[in-house]
Every structure is written in C-alpha cells, then in structure tokens.
Image (cartoon, rainbow, N blue to C red; front, top):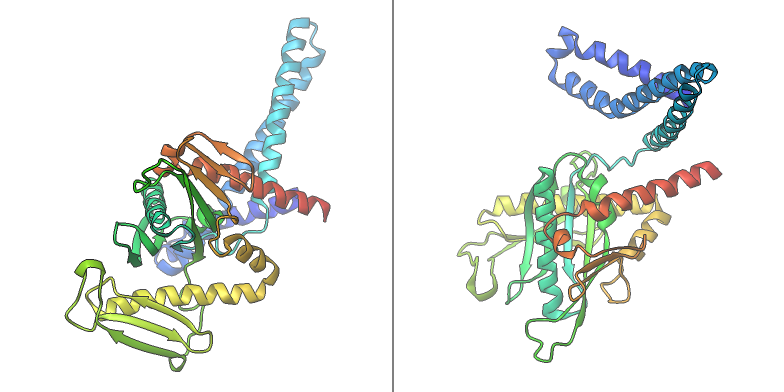
Length: 356
C-alpha cells in the first residue's frame, strides 16, 4: 500500500510542477486535465502526510519513555496511545482512498422518481421526495433542473425526472436507487388509518455524447401538441417530443418546454443516460441484477427505506439505521443517512479486498 502511495505522491509533485508551468497555463484543456487529476490525488497525499506526521510524533514520544521523571513517562505513554489511535484511523482512511474508483462517481445524474403502489398518496409522496432531493441539491450547491414531469390532479407526480449537476453528484446519490416506502394518514382518510405507499427512485449517471454512440437512423422522433392536467401548460403548437430508440424499444417523451428544440435536447439527455445504464448493465450483469432487484417494481414489500410520519422516523433497511429526524431529512438533511451508507459500503469493499 505504501509503495503505491509513494508513487502517487511523486505524481502529485509532478502535477504541481506542470500546473505552475506557463505553457500549461496557456493551454486551458491541458490545465483542466492536470488540475482534475491533481484534485483527485490531493486527499490521498494530504492523508498520507498526516500519517507520516503522526508517526514522527510517536517516535518523538518514545524517547520520553526512558525519562527519569515517572510523571513524564506516564504522559508519554498516554500520548502514544492517543497517537496510535489516530494512526489506525488514518491508515483506514488511506485504504478507503485507495479503493478502486467508481468511474461514474464524478458524473452528474438523472434522478427518476416514480409513484408506485398507493395511487394518489404515492404520487403525493413522489412530490415530497422531489422536494427533498431538490433541497439537498441546494444545500450542496448543485443545480437541479426538471427534464420531464407528469403531474397528477392534486399536486403529486406520477413521474418526474431531474438532471442534477455538481461536484461528485453520483458518488453521493447512487445509493438512493430503490423503493422508498411511506407510512402516514392521507388527508382524504376520514377514519385516521395509516396507509402504506411506495415510490421508486432510479439514479442514472448522465451520459455524454462520447459515452453512447447513437445512430440517428435508429431513432423515430414524433412531435405532438403538449397537454397538461386541467389545461395547464397546453401549447398551441406541436412542441412536445417523443423519441423511440428502435433497437432497444426505449421511449422518452418531453413536453415541459414551449420550444420543440429544447424538448428534443432534454429527451436526448434522458435517452443517452438510459442507454448508458443498459450498456453498463450488460457489462456488469451481476451488479446490474442486484440494482434491478433493489429498485424492484414499486411494490410495498420491496424497499430500501421507510418514512414513517406518525413516529417521525426514517429507517434505511440496508444498514438497519433508524433516525427520528424525519422532518430534517425531508428538508434536505440527507447526509444524516447518506454518510452512514457510504461508510457501510466502503467497509464492505474493504472486507472483500482483505479476503481476496
């Protein structure tokens, strides 16, 4: 491990030299490429330098273990014990930082939220999740843009698709894919009975044009007049777009914009990301199968998380984490769940790498 870190440290120093070179500064593409690699290596180098510093402190305190003053020897032993704890944590952090990177971690995402079991109540909860993720994006300084939405009569969503752009969005939200279950008393429930509904969430890495090669001859593009519930967003021109990818039978529609061109651009974004997801599923069939099983069909029995309103709690079933902070979580404080999830899955990978 440390031989690899030494190589990384050497490369980091080399990159610092290049980034200060006038030739590189004048070349925006090269500068951006080197700066990105430099920022990716920085956490490893910084953690390793902390590790070395703690090691030096331990060695310095060891010399005090032979001090004639018993009080000084006691202090040295206590300090070494504390430093050893820090050293173990830093070593674990280094192992995590050296884990193989998910190539999608740096990507923006398409966040697809769909009402599952539960009718209008599920659609309303899809709206709650949309607002939760939008607030989380705002707290992170990310940009969230609606690509497509299908609104119900009482303000919920049968489906809503967002493009979320920012720093390492996929790395934070990739564990949100799955069935989210809600337990609460609907406003329309006269007898106060708790209903259970479900919403499916899918997190897809945004696909660039270079990621997916789409033959224009494989596309059927239909335009039609947009319509909305209760006459909302009804256009008098054929601006809505439906794109069918003939080889895969994937169909994407978009009618949010008044411009046919803008709707086509948005629909192509969704299509590219879904095709990329399909390609990666073929390349990593086992992982993809687990993902599909996790997302499921939207049935109440399949879930990764439960939001219980009467008890004010959220439970993530994958890591048996229960938090009585439902309101905070729905207001966008999602790191309360995401941080423990990341720690858990990193630990699982570390266990597997230790076994192999």
